[in-house]
Length: 432
Image (cartoon, rainbow, N blue to C red):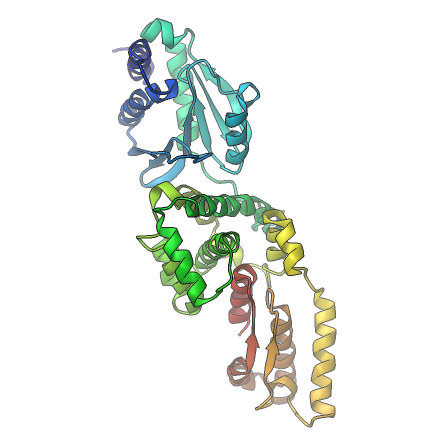
């Protein structure tokens, strides 16, 4: 029985192939010589480990800054992304040139990245290195397979297992419920990554997103700039997926999210369908950032999003503060304290009853409420809670369901930003 480490032969074959290609190099970037050997190494390693691993290479377009060289999926689930550097570059971003440093800063939003220059390998999560740099004992560019030792192979196996078996860490509070404030901080840069991919795609003359942006403007926002469209796209997809997950989409996919949303959240369901249809969703454009969102949001236990009375109270404000503080300022997206809302609702309800003769206040037939800037629905939610409590106190618990149905017909809210709209849709529909 052989005592060789599991990946020893695969790693030696990789080193030998890189050595041969570099010695035959006549054109092309040195890091390109790693691609074929890397794909073969991953395939061999997957066979040895008994896993179904697929490495999807991406063909970069001109001026595409920050596109990972590979996405790795294990059993159809995104594991992470791989960036190959020229041999001798290393995997320490402090040693990178300006272009690679700028690229690394963008990849700081990626929760699981594997960097390699052939000799050195390292895992970075959200821009921070995890574990030690794993390197071959020798230089594969000059020594080929002789650069690899049994100890190297054992270290590489540990690193690959750590990378491929990555699980998103969803922040939790002391009660083991999702900490939505910290999760907003985690989710915002991933949504921003999707936003940046859309902007980049709109600069490509053959991108199907250009036609999609035209249709979106024609339907909803005629004067929307590319920046505003990209922002709408990113927030719609992010919050539709989040809402789909909260409604029980498991496993979370675009299709399962649309299916879950279609029953009670038709507008978001349709928006998600339009924005991610097969023509617009091109792998070299937005698939990478979308996969990350699916993987991270899909790791949330749906029950954790419904465990408290109103877990979404502050979520969008926290999200927007991390996603785009300037947009938050421009949109005036600041949370109104619930105590202020409740006081205002009571005052208006009292005027309806005492001055206008509407005996059930907001619940009286013919009383229509419009919030022209509904935000996350705090005012509508305050009206629902106050009115139904009044109905129960005056007419008994049996009258509440009917009053809620009638009240729902007379509540309206306008909102231009899709993020708060999604949160408002969620909060109001659940309250009713």
